[in-house]
Image (spheres, rainbow, N blue to C red):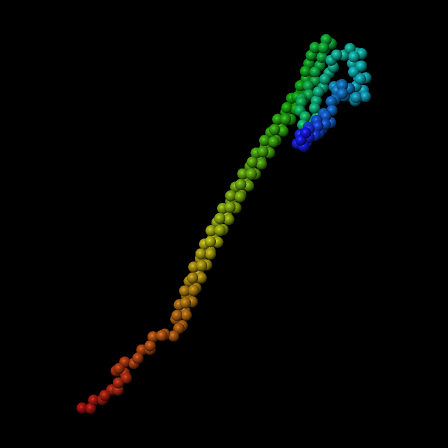
Length: 189
């Protein structure tokens, strides 16, 4: 056989061994004790008492532990039988009470879900408001930056103008007119 076939065979054998270990069938004594609602040590004795008294049916009160995980949750009903073994009365008041509790639980869960949805909506609204405020702050910062840039440009222009004004003029000074430089001839006539 190939190594792969041997590997598959070993894995299948391990799985079969594990499933055999996991599934332990309940013995008849265990089932009888659970059915009668007593310990295994008293199960046969209790069953013998029922047989001796010629009791074929007895008041059954079936219930499941609601805290047990993964089990079906069943309701409890009390059944009363007459002497002939016919059903005389079925009391389902426990079922009605359990139904009321279940309805209340559903209502509380619904209220909690509505509260969570409302909180989520308020959180979303607050996040939107924060985003809007951040955008406005960003716009204001951008406007301030542009204004600061304009102010810097105006300052630069003013500084250049002041420098130009302080420079000595490169143009020649105006010369005296000829009339001023010529001596006046006195007329002697």
